[in-house]
Amino acid sequence: MWKTKLNRQFLKILPGLKISGFLILWGTLFHSFTLSILLYGSLKSEHVLSSNRLTTLNQFLSENQILFAALSYASALLFFRDEIQRFWKERVHGFQDFARSFLRGIGFGAALMVALLFHRDYEFLGFTTQLNLNFLSSYAWILRSILMAIFVISTEFLVRVVLKKETLGVVGGRVLEVLTLVFLYWIWFEPHLSELLTLVLLFATFSTFWTGAGFLSAFFILNHAIFGLNFFENEFLGILQFKALRASENNFLQNHYLQATFFAVLLFIHYTQFKLRKESTAS
Image 1 (spheres, one colour):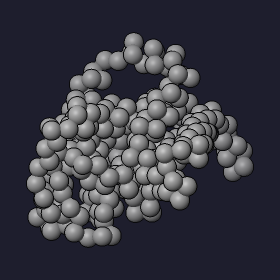
Image 2 (cartoon, one colour):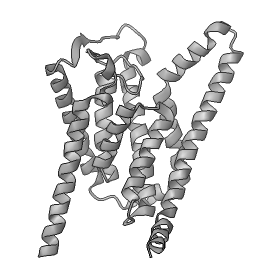
Image 3 (cartoon, rainbow, N blue to C red):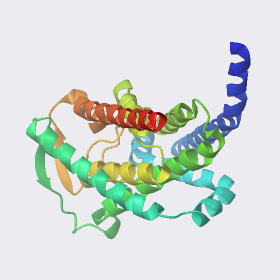
Image 4 (tube, rainbow, N blue to C red):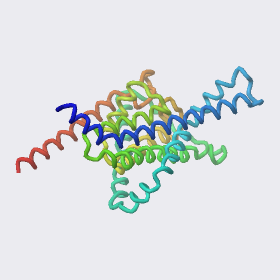
C-alpha cells in the first residue's frame, strides 16, 4: 500500500526532478567551462609569473564570481523562452508585489544593520568616494547591484516559475524548490553550513517569484553593493563601509540573529496558514 503511494508521489514529482536536475547540471557545466577558460588563459598569459598564476586566477574568479553566476543562470532562461512569454502575458499585480517586497528587503536589511551595530557585531567605518577614478570604478556599485539583481531574478524565475509549474500541488514540491535554489547557490559560492542554514530559511520563507525576487535582490544589494559586506567570501568596496568585529561572522549570512529572525518568521507563516485552514475546515 505504502509502496504504491510512494510510487505515485514519485511519478508526480518526476517532471520537477528533471527540471531541477537540468538546472543544477547547467550551472555545474557553466561553472566548469568558466574555470577551464580562465585556467587556460592564466597558463597562456605571458604577463603573469608562473608562481603567481593560480593566485591571480583565484583573485580574478573571486572578484567576478557574481558576474559569472549571473551569466550562468541568465543564459539558462534561453531554454524556457515560452515560459517567459507565457508568464509575461499572465502577469497581473506582479510588479506591485515585487516593489513592495523590494522595499521590505531594504527596510529589513537596514534594520538588521542597525541591530548589528547596536549589538557591536559590526562597526561603521565611514563613506567611500571614488570619483577621482574612471567611470566603472566610481560607479562599480551600480554594476554590482545589476548583477546581483540578474542573478537573483534568474534563479527565482527558474525555480519559482519553471520548476514550480511541474510540482504545483505535489507533496514535497516546496522542498524540491528550496533544495534546488540551495544547490544553484552552492555551485558558485560554496557556502558554509551556517550560510546554508540562512539560505534554506530565506528560500522557505517565500513561495512566489515576485516576493522572493523582490526581497532577496534588495536584501543582497543593500548589504553587499551598498554596505560592502562580504557575500560568500566575495569582498566589495560599497558606498558605506562596515567592519565585522567577529571573525566567525565575516559573512553577514552567518549571523545567528538573522537566522533566528527568519526561523521565527517561518514559524509564524506556517502557524497562520494552519490556523486559516483550520477555520476554513470548521466553517
